[in-house]
Length: 319
Image (tube, rainbow, N blue to C red; front, side, top):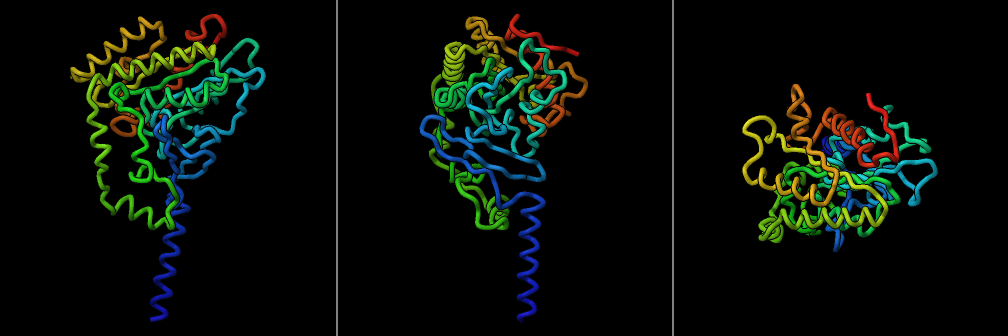
């Protein structure tokens, strides 16, 4: 019996070590609730998930440590977004959109600037109202350009809430005791619905209008911060090709176009660009999130557009 017990314990130890070292279980990213923003990634975290490096800095960004003031000779860009900007567990830190722009060899001939620095303030399922609250809390970190990276679903996002934190397995508020515990909770335990979340997701009223109002406030803040705003929207996978976006999405998209024209916001709709590529489905990790190829294409599009946003202030190289 002692031998059997020792073998079982040994196997469990090997399994625990393997789950931690190979897959990163036992060390998930932790979230903290926030009354205005809804929730944030807890600051100062590092982990690896399925081999992908993830680093969160002191300002809850998926970025390396930064100086709160603008370094000399640096063009700083602040990306605000959801899981598409963040990249999630399936994207290594070096393959996020922000890192690709920062590290691009095409980046810039930028006058007196010697380098470009792209900050990544994002979290899963954020919408324009979460991103507005983040900007109100932390400011723009002296960025010359703020990029608001949304997807079609974000036009219908609900009001910020901290309800998922500590109650939804995708938003843990503490580390599990063991990697084995996390695996059981994530894959073998059925997630219980959060009744308050169900009610919130059925939010009535003009959601599109509320989110456009949040984008308008973001635009106002960027002007107050002496920044320029670039609005970029990626499509859902099912929007590509025929029949394309659903009727309610077409209506919301047109409202966004009219809004950006009235507000004089530089707006990039990625849908027609993706549709013009040979195999747009190959740009996606799943039905909404981009893979490395998708991130590369979007980063190149944003990079080329920075010159338009900054007009004559900077000259960006193109291929």
